[in-house]
Structures are given as structure tokens and as C-alpha cells.
Image (tube, rainbow, N blue to C red; front, side):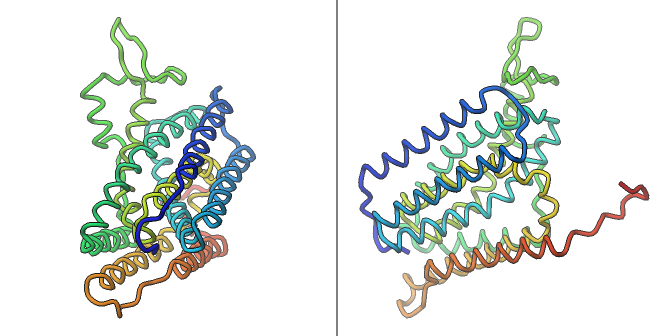
Length: 323
């Protein structure tokens, strides 16, 4: 972990902000008309987002040094891997609300915008707390171990209809049962009502808040520098939509990913405990270097994906019918 606070040039913050704004604007213009995102289009956009993240990582290496560059790459890959869980939830939300495929990108676009704001708030608070109260790292480790337990027990359930955000929305404004194209509001009997599309966005944002409980402590185990943790998170989040459309038809095949994510979360939990103990108990207690963390994440993800492909999930015997 980088010692102390990085001296990040103002122009680098500006370059990051400009990249995000321009990229979102280009994305919005490219998808201004609602249409179904096909595999080729999703692959092209996924490549673009990954390329931008890696190019920016290269700039971090050159400007801030090898340690900062390694931490950025590790944090980005960690957030990217944890975001796979979000994809399953997106699929559940879209199925629950019966969202037409042509409008799913629009929903995720606004979901990403909200996620960028929420993560900025949560990560800023997390960095501030960790810098003042190192012992909180033990609490963060406990959160990650509990998340590991839930993943292994497959207790990650999310009911979109009972989401607090959706329930709060229904109390504020009536929600119609019918979609009206890509509109969020329509008038019915002279009254302004929300369409289900707005409820879907509320459910997406609520899901991101839930996943931030895992994501924020995990990325803070890699770095406690605001620039590193936020830029890595932002680039991972920006590529989330394209990744969803790229893998939407393949999610069920990667059945070992939950186990892989559980291993990664428990490893990061151990890393947090060692970091806190190194600072609070004794400098003799070793910390896990960022290059080792990066290697573990890459290996676990690769093994999880390869095993998923080589050992396809067994068909559920819930019906006598065959496809």
C-alpha cells in the first residue's frame, strides 16, 4: 500500500474527469436511439472500456510510480471481478420488471451515473475513516468474511419488488404498470405518474448500495489513497453495462465464479487484518504486497472461469421436459 497520501498532479485529476465525461457523452450519443445491444456491439464497447482503463493505468504507472500503478491495476481488477455479482442482479431485476431489451442500456446508463456518485461519497468516507481509525480495518475484514459466507451458502438474494428504493418511490409517486417507450414519466387521467422504467433504475441503485458494502472495504484493502480507489472503481463501473450485455446469455455457465469471488473476498479480508495488525500491533507482522494481491486475483479468476467452462453446470432436474 502506498505510504502516505499521493501527490497527484491537478492535471491528472482533470484528465480523469475529462475522460469520464467525454466517454459518457460519446456512449450516450451512440445509444441515443433505443435498440437491442448485440454481442458484437457489446464486445466492442467492452474492449473500449477495458482499453481506457488500462491506458489510464499506464499513465498512473508513469506519473505516480510502480507501486501506485500496481495498486490501481489491482483495485480495478478487484472491482471488475466483484461487479460480476452485480450482473446476476441486473438480470434478476430486468426479468422481474419485464424490461424490454431495447431499454436496458438506458436503465444501466443512469444506474452507472448514480453509482459513480455514490461510490465517490462512500470511498471518500472510507478513506477518511481508515486514515483516522486504523482499527476499522478489522470491521471491514469481518464484513468481507460474512460476504464470503453468504456467497458460499448462496444466500445472496435480492427481491427487486421489495427493494427499499422501489418502495420509497411508490410512496412518493404512483408507478404505472405499462412502459411508455424510454420515458420515465407519463400523464394518466391528468396526473403525472412514473413508468416502470423509473422503478427499475431505483432497484438498480439500491442493488449498487448493497454491493458497495463489499466493494468499498475490499478496495480499501488495496489502497487508502482517494485517487487510486476512486479512479479504479470508476473505470470498472463504466464498463459494467457493456460487460452485462456481453455476458448476459452466459452468466449461468460461470457457476464457479461465486466460489472464486468468495476466495478473493476472504483473501482480501486476511490482507486487511494483516494491514491493521502491522500498524496497530507490530511492524514485524508482514503485509501482503500489492503485486501478490494482483497475482492472486488474476489466478483465482482464471481458474474459476476455466473450471466453469470445462465442467458445465448440471441441468436442474425440476422438470421432465427436455429443451
